Image (tube, rainbow, N blue to C red; front, side, top):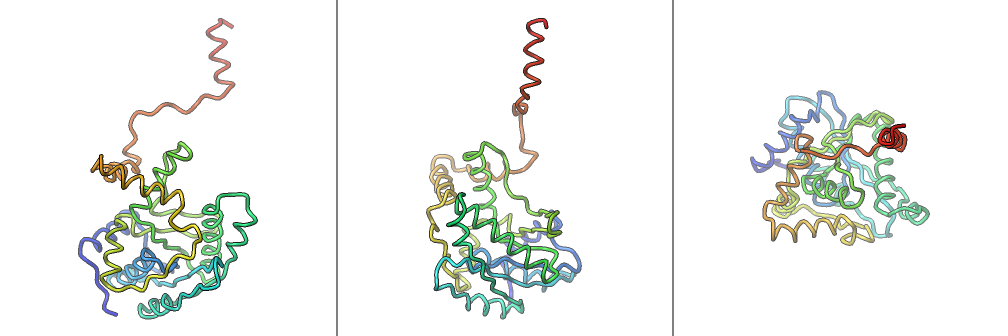
Length: 258
């Protein structure tokens, strides 16, 4: 397979790798590949970087079968990886049963067990990094979801070291938009696997995605402003953290002259 990317996309992936120091000499990177448009693109892009970069690193890929249905078939993903000279493995994790047993939101439980399985497998094969296909839309949506659901200003970072497992999580696509990834996949006839998630398209993330899309009709620069807001340098004047009860009590008594 002859590998190539539009110059703009390649330069922004390279920028992310360089700016956040995502890839080092001798890395063994495990790619989380679901078969969706984003993870297929990530796998393709990393294979291209492996070909062009002077730094030597190896790639392997893992698909999690969450047992949401009996028709989970990722033969096309295995073939895709084989064409890129990347070893592909499928691991069964009964996330469906875990969601049924847990008294938590299904997306939280699913993400937890997927991450745990990825890290466990990475450790078993000696991989020191796990690559996920989160893009700029994901980062912005996560940021807005945090504000709406928990009142917190946060999102995922392009590079995260997990102290408990010794794994470093990298996200090389953080400067790419979801729409351009989808366009590239369609143009190159990537065989995209439909998500087996039973609530796909009805999640809080989907709601936030549609909220952004609708607000952009009135505020055309909304997405660019939100994407600027995820930087620490974007913080302006914010209120101080709430004082503790003991601090409040001390100040209160000072007003009473005690």
